[in-house]
Amino acid sequence: MTSAPPEWTPRSWQAKPAAQLPTYPDAQALQAALAQLARLPPLVTSWEIENLKTQLAGATRGERFMLQGGDCSESFAECESDAIVSKLKILLQMSLVLVQGGKKRVTRVGRFAGQYAKPRSADTETRDGVTLPCYRGDMVNRAEFTAEGRTPDPQLLLRAYERSGLTINFIRALIDGGFADLHHPEYWQLGFVAKCPNAADYARMVESIGESLRFMEAVSGSVMADIGRVDFFTSHEGLHLHYEQAQTRQVPHRTGWYDLSTHFPWIGQRTRALDGAHVEYFRGIANPVGVKIGPGFTGDEALALADRLNPNNEPGRLTFIHRLGADRVEECLPPLVEALRRQGKQVLWCCDPMHGNTEATAAGIKTRRFERILAELATSFRVLDECGAHLGGVHFELTGENVTECLGGASGVTEADLTRDYRTRLDPRLNYEQAMEMALMLARLMSRKSNGWKSP
Ligand code: PEP
Ligand code: CO
Image (cartoon, rainbow, N blue to C red; front, side):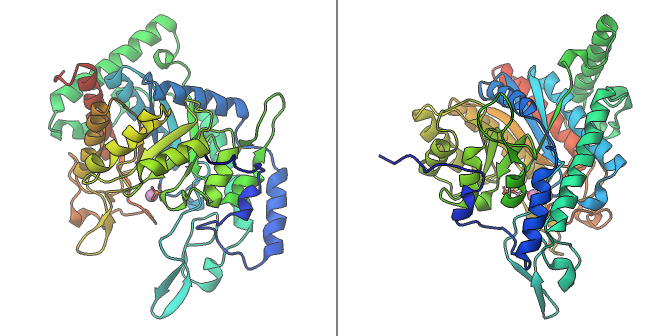
C-alpha cells in the first residue's frame, strides 16, 4: 500500500532531486527573469490543451493517430519565416498521407515553439585542454565555446519565451490562411518517389489524396474540408522546470493547473526518475503529458509512472513515447504493454524511432539510418498489434529542408553526402524527402493493418 503523494504546488518539484538543470551563477538574476516570465501572457490556452487531450484519448482508443515531429532542438537563429513554413509543410503533407493510409484522423503536434532546452550526457565539454559547461540549448546558454557563451544566462529564458511566441503567432496565422497550396500534392516535391521500392503504390496514394482534396473543395467550396479544421499543437521537452513553472497557471472556470507554455510537454528519458523533480512537476499539471522510455525500463516502473502521472487513468492524459532501438524493440516493448494491460492502464503508445538508432560514422559524424528508423516503426506496429494494443502515434526528428544528416532513403543520402549540408547542432534529422518517404511507408503499414496485414 503506497501512501498518497503529498500536496502538489507548481513549485513542489523544487524539494526533489532535479537532473539536467543548469546552475546559474547569479541566483538573483534568475529570480528576476522568472518573475518577468510569470507575468507575461500564456502561449497557449487551456481549451486548446483540453482539445488535444480529447484527441489523444481518441488515439488511445485507436480512432486517431498522432504525428509529432520537428527539430531535435530549435535555435533562436532559425526562428524565421522559411524554416517555420517548411516545418509546417512537411508535417501537414505527412499527415495527409497518413490520413489516406490509415483512414483515421491525424493529430499534428510540432516539436516547436519551446524546444530550446536539451539534456546532455556530460555537464562539461573539453576542447584543447579547456573545460567549459556543455551547451544545453538556446534557452540556457550559447553554443559558442567561450566561457561567456557557455555560462547559463537567465535572460535567455525570456528570449526563448519570445521566440516561442513569435513562432506560434506565425503558425496560427498560416493556419488561419488555409495554407494556400501547401496541402495539394501537385505542388509537393515528390520526384524521389519514382526511386522508391513501392513507387507505383505511392503514386496511387498521392493521386488519391489529390482527388479527395479536389472533390471536397468542389463540394464544400473550402480548402481542407475533408480533415476538418487543420490544427497544429505544440510540444517540447519539459526539461527546464523553472521555465515551465513560470508559465503554470490556474484559469477561470476550470479546476487544476495548466502548463501554458505548450500544449504537450514531455519528460525525457534522462529525467523520468519516479521520485525526481520532473515527475513531481508533471504529476500536478492538467496537460496531456508524454514520457520518453528507453531500453531497461521495466513493467513495474511503467506501472508506477502511470499511477503517479495518471492516477485517475484518464485516456489521453499519458503517452509513452518509446525509443528502444530497432534491435531492442521486439524484446523490450511486450513486457511493458503486458504490465499496463493487466492493470487496465490507459496509455497511448507512440514510437520515436530516432533516439534509439543514433550512431557515428567512421569519420565521427552522428547520424541515423533510414532503414533502422523504418525497422523500429514497422516492428513496433507489429509487436503492439500482437500484444493486443496498437501504435497510436509516431515521433520524428525532421526538417522540411534538404539537409543531409540521416543516411539512406530512396533519394540515397550516403556517408560522403553527410558533410554537404549537415546543419543540426544536436541530433540528425530526416530531410524533406526522407520524411515524406517515411510517411508513405507508414501509411502502407497502416493500410495493411486495416486489411488484416494483407497487401493492399
Ligand atoms: C530528444 O527528444 O531530443 C531527446 C533528448 O530524447 P530522449 O529523452 O528520448 O533521449
Ligand atoms: Co534529439
